[in-house]
Image (cartoon, rainbow, N blue to C red; front, side):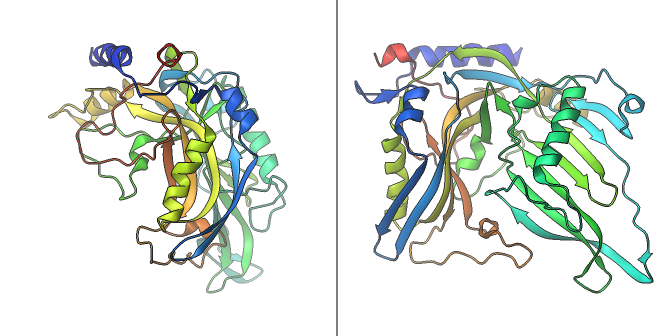
Length: 386
């Protein structure tokens, strides 16, 4: 099978690859956590402007940082919709357990005032407040929604600790206004995107998101940025859906790997600041990035069902990376583009980027157009640097 062949190819790559560490330039995850600050604070005077950095440093509280091969961990549910109170329960594929409640039916009017359609207003990518009630005209807090979500996940036999509930990728809210106004007339609803975790380490991205110029998707590539979607409706006071995307570890290639110093990571960020590109840094977060298996592409001439079957067999290599959440402008003299009026989070600017830095080399990852740009190319093990 192609999967087994690709694993053997990757194993051969690991045996011969060397990133080129010099003696004494590597640390383990515990040493990184001990030496890195909680926040990075520094003022820069560039040719174009001053940049004041006050960024949170997020490092998983784990003892080791392995490199693993993962795939979808969703299984056929042992409980039915009737047993759990959902309107629909099904396993769509290896990456999706689908829990759905029927669409909400809003009244046509309230106290003689016509009800308008849902309107998106409010989107956040960070700085979440657990005690905040995000849903318009409802007092349920983010912490309470997360707590109930954990209970639902547990009920279906999944470990809720395998998801990064405390740091959602995005939260966005929707208002139900009186028709023709911007005045709330009914409780709205909230949606949330959440990353999976692998042994306590969040999966922050798929490697295709590394390109600052955007990414292109050829029909023969597998690009799967795994995430869980959650919706909660304030009007019905219940979930609208949970699309759960768990992962399972198929193989551990290394129990732990050497990491470059955090100073080297900061040097890569400073280079982009001094070049006039990075204008603000929000967080620098250590997590996993998914890579495709070497040599595995979509086969030509397959039916949609056959493509789906091949996709479900796809596995991904999870390698440690630093994710830099920042405002990045390609032109050093250009301005950060405005944020849409429907939100108060400045990260909704089109210039919000999540850059990736290799946790072993400290180099910023920028993808080209070569055919194998999304393929896993190995890592440097401890015995090659000791």
